[in-house]
Image 1: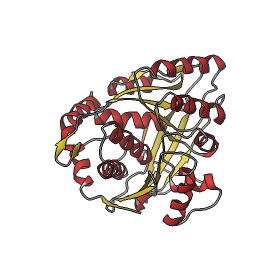
Image 2 (image 1 turned 90 degrees about the horizontal axis):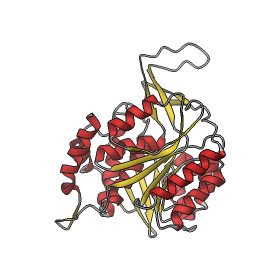
Image 3 (image 1 turned 180 degrees about the vertical axis):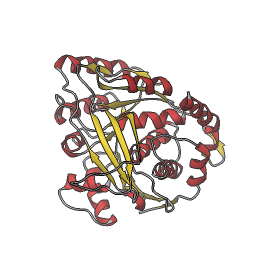
Image 4 (image 1 turned 120 degrees about the vertical axis):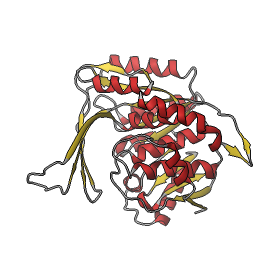
Length: 338
């Protein structure tokens, strides 16, 4: 029940975050849906150095329920949000997911499919480098797709924020994912979309309300390496021209860029002691979603989301262990107009 404790703490502290010219604003909504089409059990190992082609000794390891949307749900729950999780989950090894959802107090609307949810291996070296070995997901049947679409339609009745995050399992095409995003958008929902490769390319055609590529994913989309902030700005502006309202580019230690209404904001955190970058991007997405749900002003929203993400690299695992640390770091985030 540890996560519920943090959720209550965050809810009590909320009025200190949401201010406009000294006046407290009431929260707009605490409800959101996170969609993880291809969840994973993350087998994470910490080691001094990865010896490629040879034996590597792991100092510490863990196995836990994950996937980008699941990670977003964990952070949002810690912040005090009322979260429904959905997507596709294998029946053969769902126990750790069920335990997590129970701990977080999230509503489980995952569609069960035959087989085992994939296991992804993450090897974290002492220098902060992370090597990901991602396996294919379960095979999603037509019957499961019909059930998932019915779930989405039911959730649209009383939810306005939907987070699509992560890769696609077998049986789900990039085009199919894009139709779901378009369906939500056409019904007035705010879709936050965080994916890569073909799923990102096709999904962008549906004009999701917010996207969060990192500089590497943005490079893949435009087909050339983007090595400078100026190049990232130029590439992101082409996406804005396509009708995407919010474009957030995460650039690691260089901070976060946000384009909205033809205006750029940049947030730069102080230098952090990096323990692991696993889940930092998902934490940023959760912070952006939470800030919009609470109607934070732009600078406050960006500094809060950036502080969350910056703290995420200084810890092992995903979540918000201390909201006071977030608030303290938030005061150190530099916000400028790019």
